[in-house]
Structure formats: C-alpha cells, structure tokens
Length: 308
Image 1 (tube, one colour):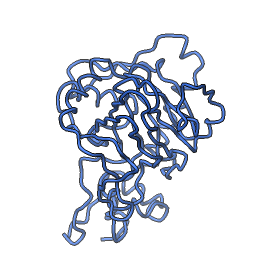
Image 2: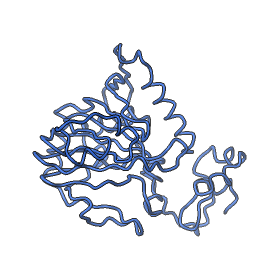
Image 3: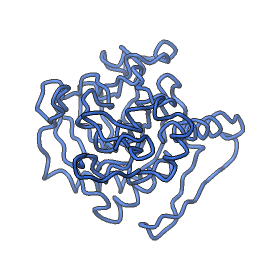
Image 4: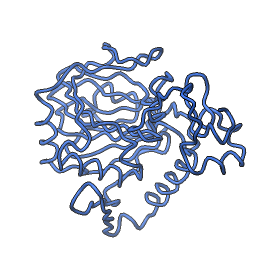
C-alpha cells in the first residue's frame, strides 16, 4: 500500500541525505538490473537536498553529456506541441499554459534509455514499472510551462497507476538565461540567495538553474500519500538560448497495468497479497478509495473489503 511505501522512501531519504559525514567520503552504490547488462552506479555524495517543503533533491551529473545528446537526437525530429491534462475530463488538450514541444520515448527503447530508467529507479527506490514513458521537451525563446501540479485533479488519470508520487526532471542542455525550474510555494525560497543571473520568473520562488546532465527529483505527495500543494512548480520562459529536458513521472502503483477493468465482469479479487492483513487492520474504512474504490475507481482490495 502506498502509505507503507511512502514511509520507507521518507526514511531512506532522511538517512541518506542528513548524514554530515556523507559529503566527506566517496560512497557509490552499485545495483544490479535485470534489463541492463552492467552494474548501475548511484553516488549519493552527488545529491544535494534542496528543500524539505516540498521534498526536492538535485543530483549533479546524473546523465553524461553523451546520454543527453543521445536523448535529444532521438527526439528532435518527432516533436509535437505539448499538452496539458484537462482537470474535468482528464483528456490531453493544448494550452497557452504550456508552450513547449515534446515527444514520448518508448520504455527501454534502447540500451541507453533502459540504463537511464534503471538508474532513476535506483535513485528514487521506486519500481521501473511505476514510471511513465520518458518525455523529451524542447523550450525555445519565450516558451514556458506555467506553475502547475504533477498530481492529477481528475479521477480518470488516477485509474492507471494512481497519483504521480515523484518527478525526475533531467536537464539535457545548458541555457544562457532563463528556463529555470521554479517552486513558487517552497518554504526554502526566502533563504535562497539570487543575483542578476536569475530571471524575473525565478525570483518568485525557489529556483533551479538548468545545467546539462543534472537531474531534479521532487515529490508531489506527502509521506502519508496526501497531495502536497508546496510541490507547485513551473518552467520559466527561456530568455536566451534553448532548453532541452527529459521528464520521468513516477506513480504510486504500476503504470503498466490499466485500472479500467469492468466491475460487472464478475471477478472479485485482491490486487495485493497483503490485502487481507490491511483489511483486518481497518484499512477498508481508513483508506476506502484505495482499498474498496468507488463508483469511478476500482479498489485494490475489493475481495477483502467485501464489496463484491
């Protein structure tokens, strides 16, 4: 269940990024991947905690420059106008709110993409199958993405994978001026020093400058699985140069499995082996939408909650 996953993830980040001695010694974690031939290296000493409210971390040099160039090369001839999710219907629609161009790669489209996706899973401690396909974006002069949330306002998009728990934003190019990622509601914005190199947009919140190879991880949900309004973020307009980025959105459940099954099919099953235990602990009443579902959303423990 997402509550236990969130608590585990929170403890991991607390222990990993609050150790004063971490920055004083080399520490590289090597994790084996079933889809990537070589070991994956994750170096926590290159990760900086930017904010706890919202929870945000910067990994310097997460991608090599060759990997950045490879992603751009794969995407540059396939770009289309970026869309946003309609808050009512959940459908993707064009909007002046978001003026970039982008495209989606396939999961594990090649060995390089597969290695990056495995590295993201190693860093975030979130399963590969919980991630959407990677989106590559290009922002030209004046293009932007107004402040928004990555979690969904509609129920349609939550039926597949649930809310987005986390976002990994990878910067594929340097930007001469502008193009910062800004968090207008961040509690850390007042303590961040800024000079004239930051754009006017970046002055409105905690801002992260795009630097080729760096990656920004932030969480859209609290550890108790409630949405975090402090995760409001946007992409400032590009003032000079061009901005390329790649985004990996990660959900609380597997994004590979559709939640659009027909409740009238007669199947009465649990999606998780722990459902009986959760039901005995009272989770059917404490967390009814996840456990039992409602008229619009299929629950994950329908059998144990006796709703079918």
